[in-house]
Length: 251
Length: 311
Image (tube, rainbow over all chains, first blue to last red; front, side):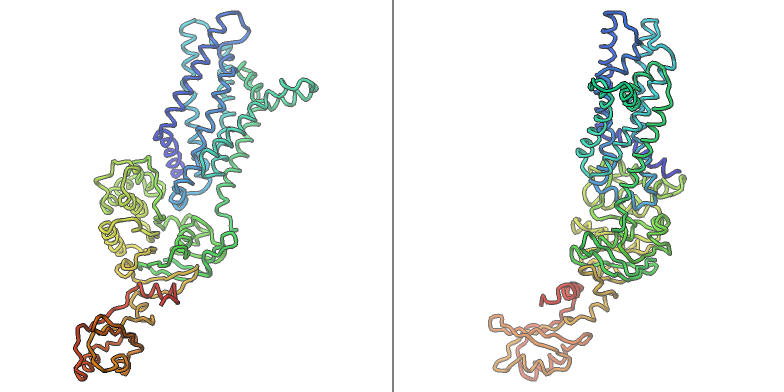
């Protein structure tokens, strides 16, 4: 277990060694802050039936920033080690392959969580200034951040897989960006296709991250996305582990 | 310490190494020699569990490198070719990380890291970013990393490549000192280095072991086991013919340097014919400018084994 923590702490620290972490943090805060202020000014113009917090997590602004951060966080995970050759000292130390894969995944997850923590301040400020609740209930906070965590885990595991397939970080970023964007915006299919039956629309809705986000940010906690994204994450990490081990196949 | 049996590695149709068999005993410094692409790095990467062999087996300190890879790796300090390092970490930080990763007990980490920094001369750069270090210092960081968990065995892939002569000397002395406590397998192109540091040498060419012996024995075995050079004025005599009559001389080649004739004598191993040559010259009243013995070097062995036709 100590080796896992050693690997994990290096992974987390390695984000802050490079300027990438600070640039991602800066622009992410900038975009999410702009999103928050736009939503507020929009809401000031007319009465609306949803909360500030709901609006924040369901805007185009948010989506744009959201899909873009995963390739940036994950592209270097394995690709950089392959490129620099540091994979050789790493894997000739007495560590297991799964320890390395999990350390990289959880390192990325910790950075991702750090990215989101400042957004809690927005709602706190809103409540402090307006003396009105930013969300309908505490369940709405819990739901929306739970959804962020679940979807984040899945997308980070996609990024891990993309990064283990190549030694070129750009290629890794493009693969994960395409897969994540396709998956995320496929949630809009039922809005685009007009001539589908309501039952098809319902089935598509089960898989739509955007619809799930809408529901969870209203505080409708549903176990279906939890099961979906946790199992998808495990599948992606298992694939990553297999691809990482491919170099050891006896061909 | 290392035992290799019928180790074979094929990449996509190409055979990198073929049926390697050798052993390295405890406390030996084994030199691994061969031209580029002979399979040195491949063998070392297999031994360090970085890549699998196609067939055959190998053990390190009694642990099978495929079945008990983790235990085998724990007994091994490996320094890869070109020493890949995390450029964004500082020297001490990196060594601390590596020590923890290799299972050095928590309370001993700073002591061990201090020791290897001392040993490898890294004290003056300990707070520097690895990315800012010169090639020589990077090499030393790699060596310190290989040593930090006190392994029984060191595998060093070209530890002196890319260093200047002073740095090479420093690294060579360091390796010699390490050889007192560790078993070492090192690969290199630099032949004098092997003669100076290694107790045994493996010469590998095109994936096969061509020779495996002590440097002294290797020198004794080869055809061009050294020779004698004579530069003299022989007048009307056929110098080459006369010299061939001396017992122990295999062959004589003659050439001229101005009015001097230069004879290169190839002699049988472990024979010194200089005395006979001197007697012949005085008897025949030849004027002698030079009479010297040329010792064969490992370079001759290497050239002869890896390029048998390059005479």
